[in-house]
Length: 104
Ligand SMILES: [Zn+2]
Image (cartoon, rainbow, N blue to C red; front, side, top):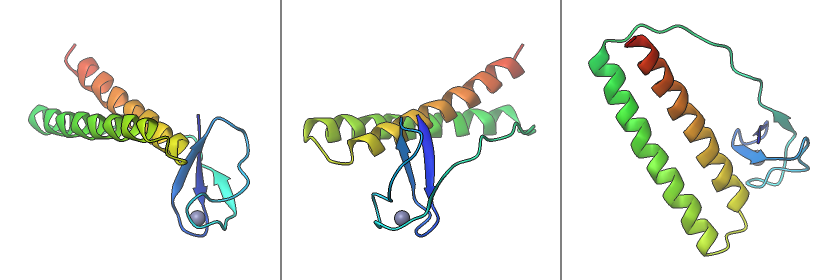
């Protein structure tokens, strides 16, 4: 799944394709592939890290709910909901992994 950013409206859209023709939100563009993020090192106390992790888990639950609702009503923006869910899942997994590794 690739993440694209619209240079006109700044919104993100998601597609398995390598290119995307136009922005699904504003109809303009250009649309560019979002660069692969670099790793960063953060220092947080455990309580804060755990609180952020729980928040992200709730956001992931919402993203999954939105995707399944969109699937049920056959939304034309289904791919975008799917992409949002995938990205949120990646973010949650990355933070969870970092948290678990920090406990070793
Ligand atoms: Zn746009």
